[in-house]
Image 1 (tube, helix red, strand yellow):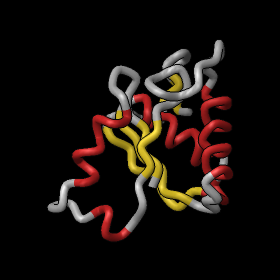
Image 2 (spheres, helix red, strand yellow):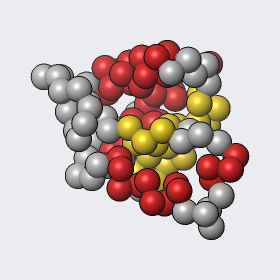
Image 3 (cartoon, one colour):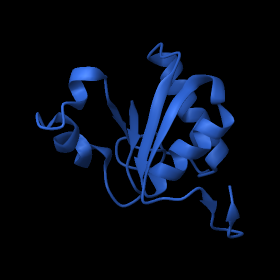
Image 4 (cartoon, one colour):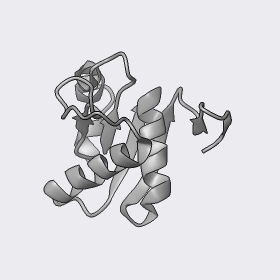
Length: 111
């Protein structure tokens, strides 16, 4: 699973949640917590386009030799997970979306 946080929080904020023994998530899957571009420890670029952020995710998956992954996120991270899945159906097994509907807020239309 690859998890993305919202714009105002670092991905590491979710480390305690995923490592909590009560949740048992790490018993059944690996979890990567990623900061999206221009946030936290990620690479910084002048562009914040969703297509480029999705390409960053695919590049990470390639570097880690992940052929498929479940993507999840909170807030804007949920939008990243959804957009990446929509554009890469052959590499995504599912999406977990916490508080972030698949909307393009520039036009208030479904993404």
